Image (cartoon, rainbow, N blue to C red; front, side, top):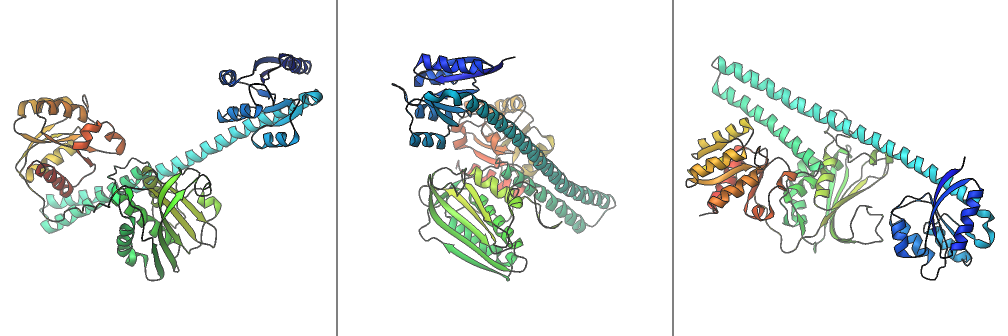
Length: 517
């Protein structure tokens, strides 16, 4: 029974194509074919599937090398064979280098069938190899997802267990008239565990590139110096710290707090790689990534960057370890030493900043991480430091729109205790109705981005139509939700990421209200 074969001929001679079709049919192929001799004709033909492409090299209006280039630009890997009467040896070698599988002369078509059979066989082998590679990649992803799920479950179960334990102990103590100072201590322990859970969530969001960023023009040198001054005692005296910071370093466009996290995680990772002491180098410089910089990182876009290099003199890593270092909860440390989220967090932060990261290491020769961050434009902005001290109070009226009842009640209690008048709503439509009834007295909207019935930004636009000057703070769990906020609305709004504590909430509310004065 003939073997089906779909052949695309790029050939200006109808007779030459017909001869090759006859030879293929004599060899036992049921040939479905099409002949083209122009770029436009090839573009249309490539929309169909082909088993093999046979092309002349020299045609009056179309060069075979251009045809090959077009085929490969389309991402097609069908075997491409040149059959020509004029191709020279140098041209044939050049064609093989840019993706042709074979070439033969029209004067010696006895080679056509063996060449076609060989290329079809090798094409099938490549297809099966790709299929196996995809399966392996899929299994690796399942393994990474399993590690992620197991790590999250482990860490959150620890936190939840501690919260449940201290909550039960505190409730029993209160029931029996326990000491107020002792109860206060137990509440602080519960809050400490909640902070741990919040930090874990932020790390996961950073890895997933869903962390809310507040980018600005940032001086990387100043951030690095400040972070190292805080880390010196943690790193320890047995490790020599050397800083080579470029004096003419460009400003970067980045969220300062997130870049601090990158510096801290890389330095702590370097410390753990040198348990017996060693040398830690932190270096910054201006770099340009060009077309000849493939050794830097295959995912790096060409352009100008600021480079942060963190290098240690530790034991280094083998290739197997390096293949997994940015996976969440992957760690080579002993149990109890780190969660395995440090480098995954770094990777996510850098990618979310439109930068990229490269690592170089070998066993016995230490490790160097290179982080490439995009440039800013203009002078560096001094990062705002959170206010520490007593909670800031007020007497204004605030509408809270939050669908989570516990979170809504907690926010109401916090604001009421600070002197604010509070109106609450559980969905977007209820928030609009409440605003219509109290528009004159409401000074600020505190609105969750994702709400039932009417999402936060949609509800805000309806309320702003009634009172354009009303201030708004949106709350969100992760960055993708903020995309629901129209750009024009986002420019005048404050976005607060969950979870938020009473100190930060009070500070942001007061800042927003004071802007109107």
